[in-house]
Length: 200
Image (cartoon, rainbow, N blue to C red):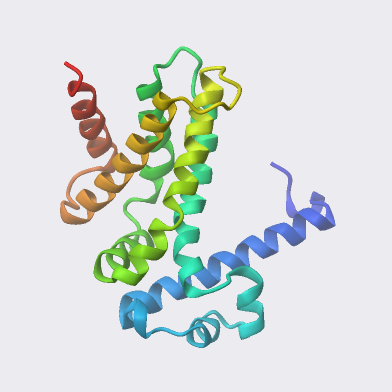
């Protein structure tokens, strides 16, 4: 991995933007958790993150966009993970391995747990997250299509796999919050084991 001393100016700027974006997101999640999604303003988020209101809008169009960005970011990571799975793995196994790779490192995590609580407590926050689901499902279907060498043409199977992948993610996340004594990888194994049994 290249050190910061060897990064190009463009790479350094991109890294800086990613750090600022993450800090805004974390500040917002903490405020949403403590005060309630509906009660938090963009001005409060900007103040908590130590930035101006104008800077906030360089990264997010609204607090709703900030919540949906969580789903889009996770979806992008899943898309990359699906593409990395071995060619010999079955579609469902590829989905399980991708979810394990992307989801498990975020548990336990106070910030991740707070995001889940915010979504469960606030219909508005939950609605904002769901706005990104169809977009993410389509991207995941495309990733499964490429693995099957269908050149990105989404089949019904690809769309089903994408839906299963996101549903499994949600189920594992909410179950972990309710049963924190269980390792996330164990939950993922159980969920996908049950899914595989449905066709038997």
